[in-house]
Image 1: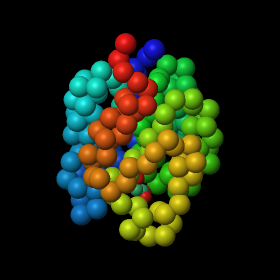
Image 2: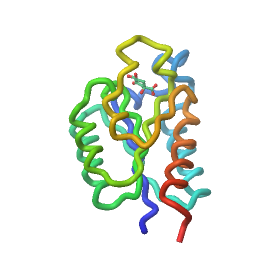
Image 3: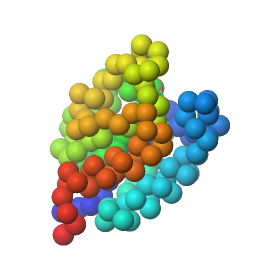
Image 4: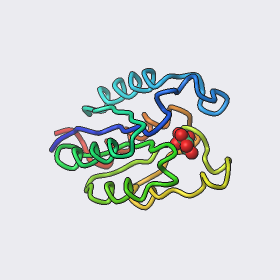
Length: 148
Ligand code: DQA
């Protein structure tokens, strides 16, 4: 069984660290990737880490993950609240999907309270800062079982 997990990031997350640091913190996406790689090594997972500002690219990575991955960790960013297309793509994936939000979306504007992606997610982590990504990887590792 594969131990490959896709970690997918949506629009504007390339600006993490510079973008509204009072909300998203000072860590960059490169820091998040480094933390994810460290956690994955400890959990016996392999990861593919991607970010895009384009909806279709995220959909294409989900389709790719269908063929090769055991799980998906996804922060769809603003597409969370708008994208039926990303939801539909995630619905085609059979393994665990963990939705991550760095901020506590439930404490923010009401349009951030609704997530399409949640309809396909095994679980949601919100408001744990960038630590949410490594917590999500722990959960995926648990859901896919012990390393063989
Ligand atoms: C976010 C929350 C979204 O509402 C927002 O559009 C983002 C980031 C988060 O990680 O807290 O871009 O997904």
